[in-house]
Image (cartoon, rainbow over all chains, first blue to last red; front, side, top):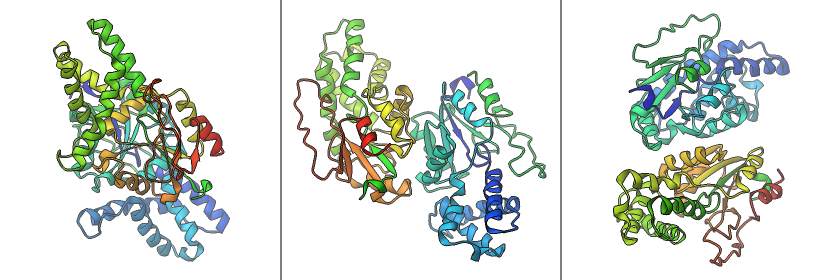
Amino acid sequence: MALSDVKALTFDVFGTVVDYRGTIMREGELLNQSKGLWVDWAQFADAWRARYRPSMARVMQGELPWTNLDALHRLILDELLIWNEINERFTEDEKVHLNRVWHRLQPWPDVIAGLERLRKRFIVAALSNGNMALLVNMAKYSGLPWDCILSAELVQAYKPDPRPYQMAVNLLGLHSYEVMMVAAQAQGMQAAFVPRPLEHGPDHTPDLTPDPTFEVVATDFMDLAQQLGT
Amino acid sequence: MALSDVKALTFDVFGTVVDYRGTIMREGELLNQSKGLWVDWAQFADAWRARYRPSMARVMQGELPWTNLDALHRLILDELLIWNEINERFTEDEKVHLNRVWHRLQPWPDVIAGLERLRKRFIVAALSNGNMALLVNMAKYSGLPWDCILSAELVQAYKPDPRPYQMAVNLLGLHSYEVMMVAAQAQGMQAAFVPRPLEHGPDHTPDLTPDPTFEVVATDFMDLAQQLGT
């Protein structure tokens, strides 16, 4: 793949585009205040996210039928509320609202300006394990200027299964060498690497060494736009 | 359905949002000039569009396997080029480009301002028989500010088959009474009617009487925004 072949950029969303940890901490802090709770929401966010891969694995291994991410998030949330001994402090409506914090995730500071710049030359598409409703609501809430929203839900297979990536190439009517994945983690395809050192919080020391298969390594979306010549 | 329940508007695209006839006439006129042709491009556009429903019917009846709209458009284009005795005047690359005029369709004058206004309150989504690549490229080319692009291609069934409508409701995570279809023709579901008297050209006298099942009848997208309280 030559960089000049690239026509579309597909973006990993959680972690790469939006800061789930920071958003959940901010909303959680308000809940602590309004409900008089003492929950460590950073830990809560980390636990919610940590159970994400195992829950998807249960779907992909056939232990659960197809279950979209909203529903998986809810299964995990219910466990975490019980584990934190705060389940009785939330009404069902409040649980529904809290589960939809994933629809209200806010972008890293460079994201909107970076996407606006990148989309002048490229198709910019979300390609996420989040379900469509989650991604559409998030884009609307946080002003993410996608040209197109694509979800693993459309092929009922979660990344890193190859089907979502192949779907994106097919639906965009492109060749695989014309589509570049942008991610904060290795994705198993030609990709740009944008590390998000704060994804897991300031106390976490992630290995930010890019996989040598990445075509582009950028510090943020503005740097990515620069390197791609926009 | 009460209008106050509506959370998302799904839009029929060809005819309702974009003026395929006008766009094809404009591009065709340039081809007449550059190639010294005498094609009546209004008639050409009408014939291209007239064969659209029968070609989709061939797919839905199983006479053809799933074939996306780009490919159906190309089958029709090849027939029309031969029928007009101009097939030899186009290289393969030129035919590919001409077939993609459907990716470059331009909106009716009220559309962009109307969508911008409507999307302040509602999710605005394309819901079209056009394939995803066609719709994504069109949105980019003509600046259509969709929150989400949904295509019949995602369920491999063309409207008016109920599957695309049901898909939209499911993917948006809504109830059917929360989704309103906006169309210039009856769509077999709760809908707003926006007549486009010039869709088939000035000499055509369409029956613009709205189906009594329409919840809203609007003169254009700005009027629709007004009636929906945005």
